[in-house]
Image (cartoon, rainbow, N blue to C red; front, side, top):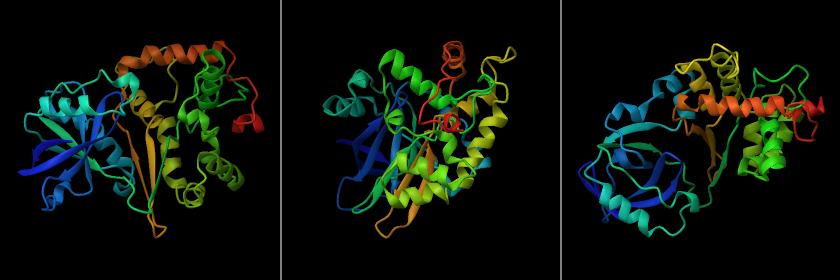
Length: 301
């Protein structure tokens, strides 16, 4: 653990997890005193790379707040930091269970971090994390495709590289999540989780949220990355790709109440446009949209 002063209060930080761009820490009181109200039920997220403009940490926040109800979003709150590099990096050196491919990542420092909603399960609570992915077909998919974008990439990745991600292992088609048919939504829910309460949420209450995601994926990216007029300043594409890779956190309280929030909504960099084009070309030219399988909604007709 690391000692840090936040909001004028001595706190302990405990490593929780990390992704490609951020570290996430649990905030605990250093003494028997309670944390300040602002820090309660919050996690501290720190950017790995140095950021000299605090507003960059909240990029895209206004976009998501405008289209989703606040209670369906992981909330973000900018917080000033004391000098933290040595303390944080000493903690990271001591963590034994960091992902092997990220063990050389450390914090470059910065003046601010982000407080985010803590969705960690309490005693007898259950947390399910899932990625809805591409809830509408790729605009660049060939006519008559028998696989959606997510299922096509899954099939290609497994066949060509032997790679099966955590999302791949769920063997679920995103199109089923937003289907008009209850049976299709139930199939998707059953494949995503064996938690009956989460299944019930996905089949019914999640539908407005998922369909909003689907609608904006289509609105912001109507032509796809292979369209000749896609430019490096295509902000709509960035927003659409962010929605296609965010995480839905579904927390089931011990009393059965469900709290569900979208997170991992850091805006996708348009530096990735060329990489996205290469992937799409590979799927189209390799015939991966046209293959049949027992997972994709399009293959089942």
